[in-house]
Image (cartoon, rainbow, N blue to C red; front, top):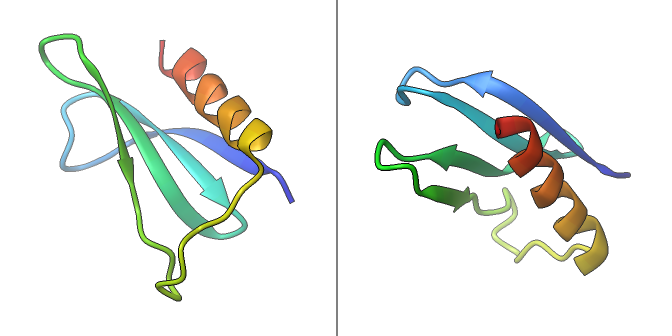
Length: 70
């Protein structure tokens, strides 16, 4: 399975965000702050066992999210 990156509008954010999904679980959200900074929010796994991903796959997903978010 690969990561899925989706651009979304979140009710608690002023701008669009890039969500990173693994299967049916959102694992991260990239966002821009009003001052232009970029941030990533990481979400816990449902099982509370740490996520474990291929570093290359994770890096590609973050770069894709960054690119889509602009």
